[in-house]
Length: 163
Image (cartoon, rainbow, N blue to C red; front, side, top):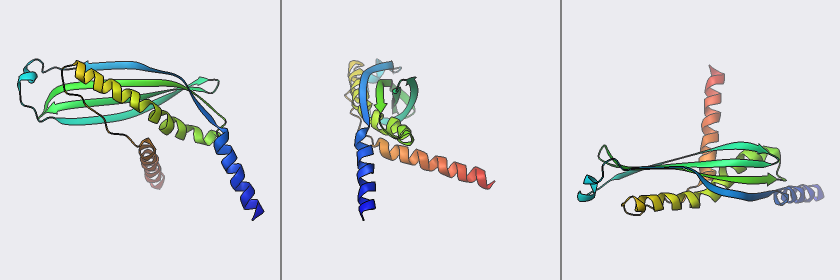
């Protein structure tokens, strides 16, 4: 019983010992295209919206990492592109005190969660400045997306090891 309490205390102590600090948040790349203007402004639209997310990381040394959250929003009327917004919202994070096996999870979940509100604002702002109604991206569960990615990787590994 005492060993269980000690183990639980050590786990909790490890979890709280780590630090994630934001050093810088910035827009790394931004693109807006509206190929159907000005004609699209005179039409009654019922567009479809496709949203894609991805992220990548880069080790900058000395416990610093750049994380880039890419958001692509494509708005179409039938098969015709109304507008396209691509944002690469980036941040530099200092991550210390966590077990090394947790680093990839932190970079794939906690950092994108921090960057998402900034990317969401850029997407909404640029669409409005392009003459279109404001677009608000719904919250994203990066923890779930990461878990799904890990599951797909495990399944792919299982398929290749059985062949």
